[in-house]
Length: 211
Ligand code: MHO
Image 1 (tube, helix red, strand yellow):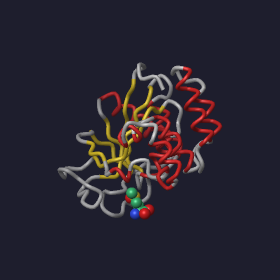
Image 2: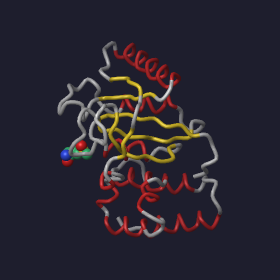
Image 3: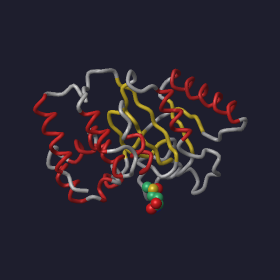
Image 4: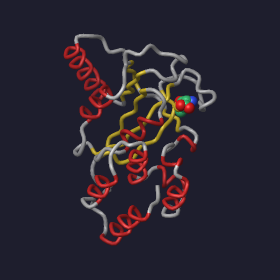
């Protein structure tokens, strides 16, 4: 996907980070995703020792293709923020704003939804300080269940980090989790602003992958 359009990022927690990475990664307008730990104070958190941090997803998106408001509405419609927190803060419903504009939009949409459902939404809205990327095996967790396809895809990237941060990996990670279809990914790719040769290679690759 073209990188030259303006991008924005949103960091949120809505339970185990594997699924929301797949769910948001399949959305047209989303450029890349990664999972990590945020919202707490512990330095250098890891999966085994995340301290007071929460499992979160960082979504980078083209704001003129998908709006922050759309993402926030999806965030609230796709999990239950009323669920009591367990395992301390690991799985809380959490929105982390990067600036005053994001904070305002989060509070506005939350208020609107509370009005619509006539109830309280227990989502914490806090400032984003640090986002620590989770261990590599947690990135694009679902696609890696498909070992042959992953190896095939990986061979098209210079390294694992490039594979993890690519748009096509985000889409396919959603597809294998049954968010979105291969047909819709192929259709979307046909609109991408990339050189024809690259486009043909990508479409061929999608046809060749065995799931
Ligand atoms: N251990 C749980 C959650 C993993 S998630 C990265 C599971 O296997 O589903 O917290």
